[in-house]
Amino acid sequence: GENVEQHPSTLSVQEGDSAVIKCTYSDSASNYFPWYKQELGKRPQLIIDIRSNVGEKKDQRIAVTLNKTAKHFSLHITETQPEDSAVYFCAARDNNDMRFGAGTRLTVKP
Amino acid sequence: DAGVIQSPRHEVTEMGQEVTLRCKPISGHNSLFWYRQTMMRGLELLIYFNNNVPIDDSGMPEDRFSAKMPNASFSTLKIQPSEPRDSAVYFCASSLRQGTNYNEQFFGPGTRLTVL
Image (cartoon, rainbow over all chains, first blue to last red; front, side, top):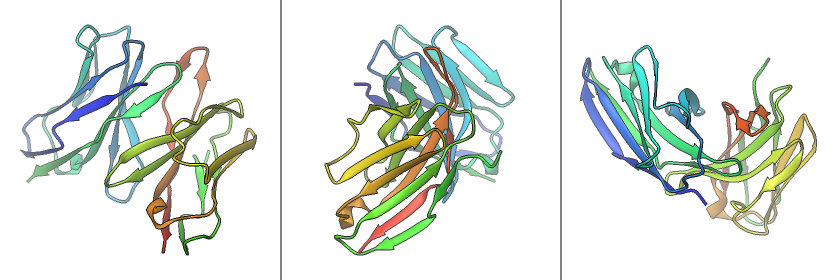
């Protein structure tokens, strides 16, 4: 089955700086890579996703890049704000299996 | 749409008791997922259904866990008998599968289970 590794486990940045979270996956058949944001005590919510037929996707301050050859994908948040503070999860799925990374706790200091 | 609905939101029970968690997916979605979240193990996929049929239950930890989806608008996750190590937040999520493409999963608010 799929195995997803996520780094770093914690990340602290100053407001306005950029944050980058990286994930690797093991199953070359994986074709869908979502990123979720989970605030304390709340449910995970999708913030951006990418499919295997594209290498990059951007939505305002958030972007995701995918390198299928190396089997890794990254989340980039620019101009971070205190409300970006949360736990972020990457995930990878093929047609049958969805696995999440262990999560990254992002803290944006004002 | 009210989104994915889960009940109860909180459950406190004693070891050995049966626990039933309920989920109503978003209307029109044809895939339903049960997850368990703990600090130690993170977010784990327990089981998922496509068109009410269980596809992969390899994440179900033990025979004490069972899940059903009798129709497109309802699913249950049952733990019998419950143990303290089952304490976690259980999330249900649903999505629309189109062909071989899975789309965004929408998570319910979760059920926080505490087994004493």
